[in-house]
Length: 133
Image 1: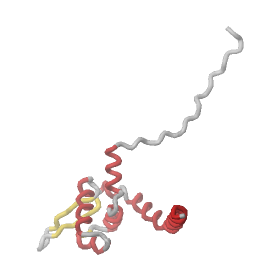
Image 2 (image 1 turned 30 degrees about the vertical axis):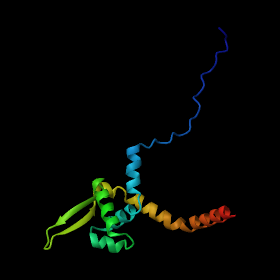
Image 3 (image 1 turned 45 degrees about the vertical axis):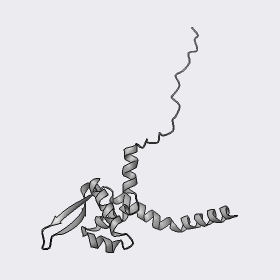
Image 4 (image 1 turned 90 degrees about the vertical axis):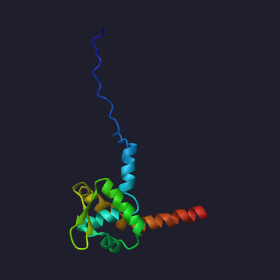
């Protein structure tokens, strides 16, 4: 054996591994990030609302789309549907504890879109002009 033993080498640094997104996670993300869910979650984080209050808060959503969105969010545990014992009986939608965990993310995404929309518009215009030529 040689007197000059090789010193152990440190393991090579590795790049961070991107998390794997499962099909089930992708489905959940698609449902939480769909066309109307962020706005519904945002409105319900402010306070509980009845269906027509939500329609007024998000005037461009159709009744059919809002119904489907609320049902999907309720099924995923983000929203609670509560029957209010008034006369006539009314239904109120509330953010659930699980849905409340999304509040900071929803605020961040909606804020990001408002802040960066001018840059996105400019990028779209540049792209469209370049592809038309």
